[in-house]
Length: 170
Figure 1 (cartoon, rainbow, N blue to C red):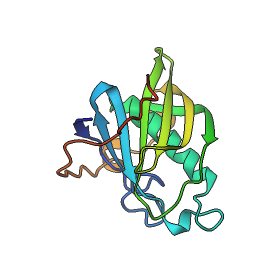
Figure 2 (figure 1 turned 90 degrees about the vertical axis):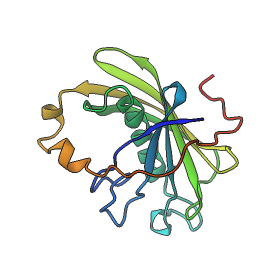
Figure 3 (figure 1 turned 180 degrees about the vertical axis):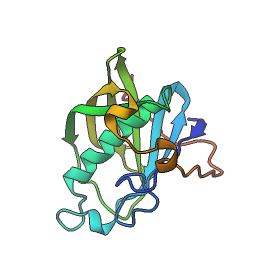
Figure 4 (figure 1 turned 90 degrees about the horizontal axis):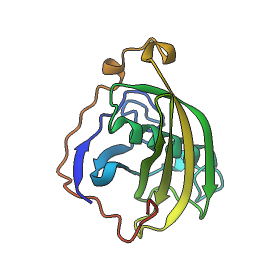
């Protein structure tokens, strides 16, 4: 799928924070058809059992993908997780390239719902989840300056992201 644009990274977020040495430091891209895609790899420090990523970090990635899907149309808006349902299909390894995809499946003026997936390089679903977020004014979420925290606007040469036969969004 063709990339429409790259989303910004934060300073300290555990998923996208570039200044967080313990974080995943994922990069997120807006694709055609209002799909967000994250490119990342978990680190050995993110393990539960040796060779496997901790389920909490897998859920955190699903959570991040859901909000990133919302930011495609509302990049200056804030929302907080109300519910998160994660299904672990196969072990998620660390130290290998992975992809995450997310898409809004329901939107109202008060909340949205998103379906999200973590895929390996063969586009097999390793984990999937759905999240429901409450949309709130930024000042009710944090007093931090979003422009200061989400300050990294890295450009790269990617033009497309391969999702193969992955058709979970129907």
